Amino acid sequence: MLTREYVVQGHINRFTLTKGRTGWDVREERDDTVVRRMHYSDWHRVERAIQVFELAGRQESLESLD
Image (cartoon, rainbow, N blue to C red):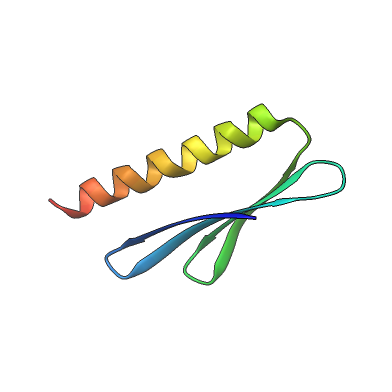
């Protein structure tokens, strides 16, 4: 299992990746609410989902500095 987490202005954004029998399950949460749940059978799509989450987290962190 892989978990990435960003805390911005008291809000928690979490990305969780688990290996399933036929691929990878991805769950994205904001605070305690699941906002996206996907299943991927292609690792490259998993890598892309991780990159999108990390970029969004960095952008939110930078915007909170203004």
